[in-house]
Amino acid sequence: MKYPVSITTASGYGENTVAGALRELLAPLGGMDSFVRPGQRVLIKPNMLSAKGPEKAVTTHPEVVRGVVRLVQECGGVPLVGDSPGVGSTFFVAEKCGILDVVRGTGAILVPFDEAVPFPHEIQTFRRLEVAREALEADVIINLPKLKTHQMMGATCAVKNLFGVVVGLRKANLHLQAGDDKARFARLLLELARHLAPALTVVDGITAMEGNGPGSGTPVSVGALLAGSDPVAVDTAAWALLGLRADSVWTQRVARQEGFSGSSLADLELFGPTLESLRPPSFRPAREGDMGFGIPPFLRHGLRKSLSALPSADMEKCLLCGICQRHCPVNAISIRGNHLHIDEATCIGCFCCQELCPEGAITARQGFLLRLYDRWLAR
Ligand code: SF4
Ligand code: SF4
Image 1 (tube, rainbow, N blue to C red):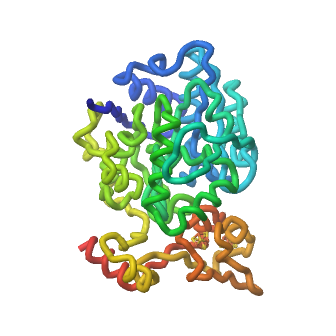
Image 2 (image 1 turned 90 degrees about the horizontal axis):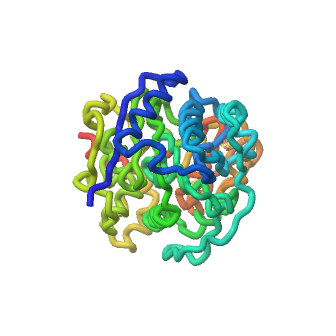
C-alpha cells in the first residue's frame, strides 16, 4: 500500500494565496470533503507553542488556520481550534500568534485543552497517559504542524505536533519518565500519533524554522505546503524535502527501526513538485544532540558529557524570568543571584528549557566527541 502525500507551493501568506494553495494541495487527496462530513465536530490542531508573532515561525501561521477552517465550514463541519501551549494560556498564545483573530473572524471555536482524561488506547511506552478531552471527543482531527527544527527530537512536524494533546505540565512528567532515552520518547510520540489517527495533516512549510528550534530558531522561506492522511508518511516527505538525514530525526529513526509503514520514501505516492525542487539551498538543522547509538551503555554513561549536547544559557540574553526553571522536569535549573545554573549531572537533555525560553537564551552545547562527530558528518 502506498501513502499519498500531496505537496504544493505558496509564495507567501496572503489570504487568497494560501486559500488557493490549500485547494490545490488537497485536490489529489479528494478535497476536504473526503475528510469532513456535514455536522462533524472537527478539531483543528495547530502548533501554538508559545506567545510569539507569526513572523517568528514558532507557531502555525494564522492564514493556514483560516484557510483550513473555511474549507471545513464549506463541508458543513464545525471547526474547533485547540492546543495546550508550553507557556501561557491558550487564549493568550492564540492572541499573540494571530490565531484568535482568525477564530473570531471565521466563527470557529477556540477550545483550550484544560481537561485531561485517560487515553483509551494501549500505549506500550508508558503505563499511564492522559490527553485533552477535546481530542478524544472530536469526530475528526486535522493536524496543522509547523515545519521546524527541534533540539531534542531533531525536527518537528506531523507526529510531534500531536504531543500538544497532552495537557499542560503532564508533558514535563512524560519527559521525566522518559529520562534521557530519546528513542523511548520518540516511540511514545509515534504511538500517540497512530492511535489519535488524525484524518488529515496539513503542514505549514511556507516559512519553516532552521537552527535553534523549536522556539528560538531562524525563519527560513521554503514556500511549501504538504498534506496527507498518515502523519509518519507526511513527516517522511517533509524530512526529505529539507534534506535531513532520516536518522537525525528521532521519530523517523525509531519509525524505521520498528517498521512503521510510511517511514520510507518508497512507501509514499507523491503528488506535486518534486521534493528536491523545493529544498532550501542550505537548511541549517538543529545541533546534533547525541551520538550514543551503537556505544555500549557502560561507556555511554561514563562519556555522557562528551557524547551528548546539554543546554547552556547566554546570560547576555537571559532575563532570569524563571520560565525554564519552572518547566524543567528534573529541577536541574536554579537561579543564584543574577546567574542561571544548570546542573548537568541531573539534566536529562529534554531541552524543554530551550523550547520555552522567550528570549532564545538557551542553546545546545555539544560535548567534545559529539563536536568531532558533527564535523565528520558535515565533511
Ligand atoms: S534562560 Fe530564558 S527562560 Fe530561563 S530564566 Fe533566562 S530568560 Fe527565562
Ligand atoms: S535543564 Fe533543560 S534540558 Fe535539562 S532537564 Fe531541565 S529542561 Fe531539560
